[in-house]
Image (cartoon, rainbow, N blue to C red):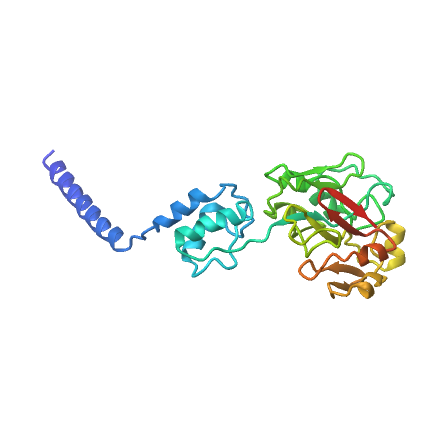
Length: 288
C-alpha cells in the first residue's frame, strides 16, 4: 500500500499534464467551421444525390463558401431558386441555372430491335453488359433491366412494359445525373429542357419545352446498324447537310445534335430516313 499511493498520484499528475497539453494543442490547431456552411446546407434539398459533383449536400455547401463566385456550381435538384438563395447568403450575384433533363438516347423498342437471343442471368444492366452485348443485334442499345430506375432517387424513370425502354418523367426529373452514371451503355444524357425556340411556338412561351436529339448510340456502319435496329442512326449525313445552324456533327458513323446551337428548325427531323432523330414538344414526342 505504501507504494500504491505515490504511483496513483504520479499517474494522475501525468494525466492532468497530458490533458492540459492536449487542450492547448487542440486550441492552437482548431479548425473554425464557417457558420455559413450550416446555413447553406439548410437551404439545400438534402437529396445527397451527388449531382452537384460533391459528396453530399454538406460538401457542396462547403464548396460554395470557399468559392470566389458561384460560377460552375449548381445544385441540380434545387435549381435556380436554391442557387439564388445561396447567392444571397454569400453576398454573390444571382446565377442563372438553365434547367436540364435526362433523355434516353435509344429508340430501339422491341419491334424495331428484335431479340436474337435470351438472357437468363441476373436482372442487372451492369452485369449483363459485362457478360455480353445484349439480347439483340445492337450491342449499343438499352438492356432494359432498369439500373437507371434503381439509381433514381426521385422516381422519375420507369421501364415501359411493352418497349422495354426507360421513360423519363420530366415533372420529377431533377437532372441529378444518377441515371447517367448508372447506365453501362452510356445511353442517358442530361440535355437542356428547351433549346432555342420551336418554329410553331412563340419564343416567349416559357411553359413550352421543346428539343431535338438523336435517340441512338450505335456506332456501327450504316448497313450493320440498320440491320440490328430499324431506328438506328446510319450516319448518312442528311441531317448534317440540312442543318443551317451547324448544330450537328457526325463522328464514328453517329450523328449528334449540340443543344446549345440547335434552333429547332426541324429540318433534320424530316430528313432522317430511320426515325433516329426525336422531336420533343411539351408532352408529345414526335418521331420522324
